[in-house]
Length: 120
Image 1 (cartoon, rainbow, N blue to C red):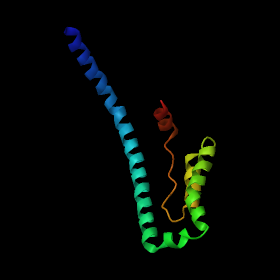
Image 2: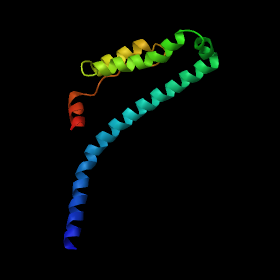
Image 3: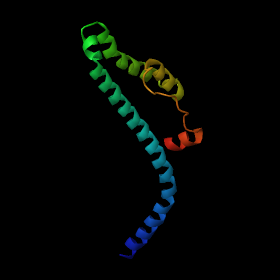
């Protein structure tokens, strides 16, 4: 029973050291999730406006329908093939060129030290 109490004290001491590193990771993940939530909200607004304006009805009977339908798939495939050779900023700029209505402003990537720490 004594060992259990001692290990509990060591565990509390170890957790105290993790609090500072967890705070940085939490802040980073909050930025990521907020960025993703903003993109999802923007997608919903654009879909709603397109549906209410009659854009879908006018495009559905034309060959442009297939272009609109398959363009995101082509963009995803292109970026997935090139993901190892392009930077985050280049990918966001490329995306913003294909989506002129969206607010896909390029953001600065995190500093190198932060990127290396996140990979560990």
